[in-house]
Length: 166
Image (cartoon, rainbow, N blue to C red; front, side, top):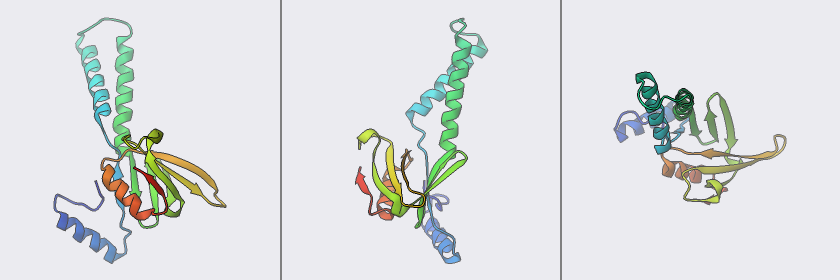
């Protein structure tokens, strides 16, 4: 979902964005992490194992409470990951927010965008960057945004020097 879109009216979101530009605010796009089928599977497994544990139904083994706790921890991490992982783009840089850390990458530093594990069909995008001196170094991050198409369009718009394999 793009930042600035309030409600369901496209006209309203355009007015808000133009007002922000007029007032001098930086216009940016925000993309949240996708909460896909795997996330829902973990949540359902956690709910089923906790219900089975609390209600006393199912197999009475010693491993059952551990399964319930582990599945709850993984489901909690998946849900928190959805809410606290997002990417912001504006005219100067791309900011990667992952829980309490933020990484800022200038558009001139973006070098390559492709599917994870060199597969363009992958749901994840691998974004590579290279920094020049004095903060020289190379790195990459994985992105799995809700709106993949809009994310790639904005990357193409802001980072035209990067190679795209998607």
